[in-house]
Length: 258
Ligand code: IPE
Ligand code: IPE
Ligand code: MG
Image (cartoon, rainbow, N blue to C red; front, side):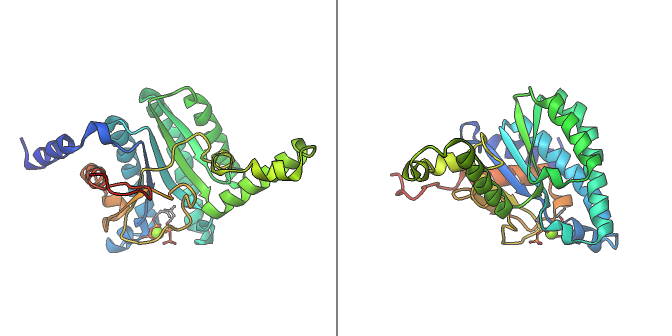
């Protein structure tokens, strides 16, 4: 056996199946820097990053992770040069088409979070097809964050709540309406309604920031930051992040268990 596969096998064996994160969320960062280091255009990094996406989906599925959320395009990413944005949208479309069969084979359901209505028509058209085709799959949910921003998600939830109140609760006493909002109700108005909060949040490329990702949902997520750039992130690195997660003590504001 090769050394690398030995290391790979022993890493998998160290993972405790009973303590897996249910939901892993990833800020896939560093595509541009990966390309620059090689003297290539930023788009080459995005292209290579797609292979890592493929690896992450397969690895999480095989590990038994129930939800994988990938931050693919933020509400702020429209600020990038038009050429790069267009490339990313085309890449997204290609990915959604290519993945359709693979997701079916692996029984993975595709879900999207973000202001989807603002995406180009050619992306939306393919998205709808893949969402429909995979809607009955139950092995894992692949949750793609597209044109996603944590702040607009909260704004959209507030708007949605107000609309509901104005439309269907206007006969109730104001106090009753106000008190009907608790954490659970609020969560049910977010794009992530029905999904558990992430247990583990991974960010590649060594940046110590959230960049507007899942602001509400990561209140108690364990954060794992690695210097590795997304196109270089390998299966072993994902196992390492899960192992690090399993060594954390999650207290949720309580005290250390003895
Ligand atoms: C992440 O890589 C991909 C997207 C945000 C779409 P970047 O493109 O942000 O790469 P860096 O951070 O510039 O290296
Ligand atoms: C966050 O990365 C968004 C995605 C990974 C899609 P960015 O590269 O956009 O974040 P900043 O600008 O470095 O904070
Ligand atoms: Mg970046």
